[in-house]
Image (cartoon, rainbow, N blue to C red; front, side, top):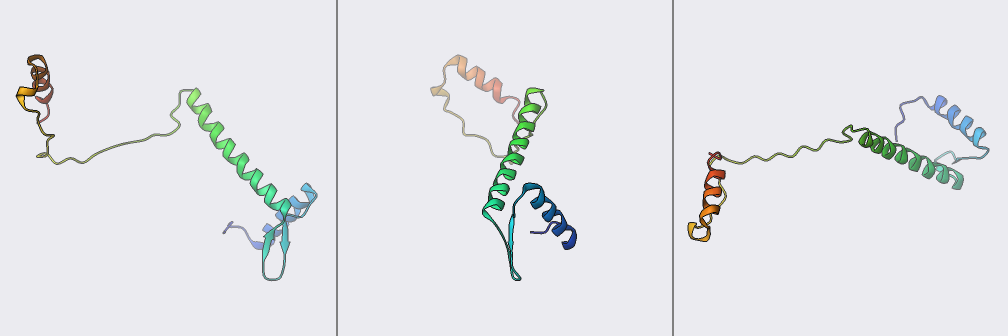
Length: 107
């Protein structure tokens, strides 16, 4: 994972966080860095908090009448493709008139 911060600055921030929390978040060796049990717990809680924050933002926007997300649905339909027509014998007089007037604008 890249965090776009210089390694010494990142180490300083992690050490400050560990001091603030009162425990070690990582086990460091010369070859690898792994989360401790406390580090895993802290990470899981942070992910949950951020997720809850995002959900709270969307709910608040919804309640305020703001669009939380936009979904756009579109289709591409060739001009010559039309749905199959029902046989005229299957339609009653009123249904045939409604279908004819409904299809009049679909050229």
